[in-house]
Image 1 (tube, rainbow, N blue to C red):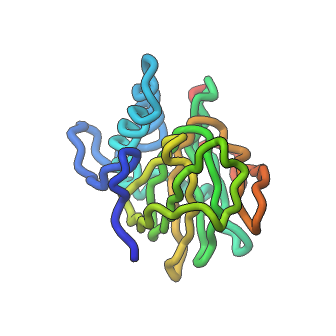
Image 2 (cartoon, rainbow, N blue to C red):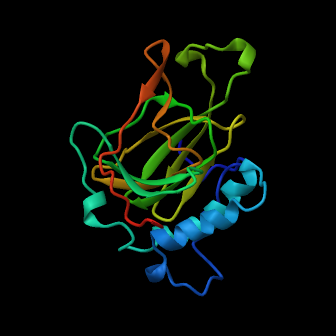
Length: 215
């Protein structure tokens, strides 16, 4: 039932090849932030930003030492959200999410561009079609599932509202999974579609100290 990264225009290449002179072992949070800054130059579309971030992310995902142990701490009750980098201009954040076996999200939106990459383990993404605005609110059970993708280390996917904004994610493996998320806003709240209702859910960071800062 699963497939590799979605063929949607908002999906990412799963290739880890790169023409950059930087090796994967040298490509850390600072280098990733530099590439994201370049992707945001001018007035690019969200689709263009996603494509460029997707192209840069595999080098980070291939660096086994890119994320320190302090930002890889899990929680048996829920997945954890750990801040890797916060853009000083508040244009984006980079997070590491740690998922223990079986942990998952409800269906939710993002309201911004975003890219998700698998760092360790495997993560399943179930995407849903975004309903037209004139039919909102909509019951979660009426949402149309569009793709199911299983991301392995080095692979990524993207969200690009309004056409591709709704999904849920889950760790179907028997062990721990770590994913890296780049969001075009601080992403401390989103709309959650769960148990027949749509609610606004607020989040906190489990690890609030970034791995690198420009200051």
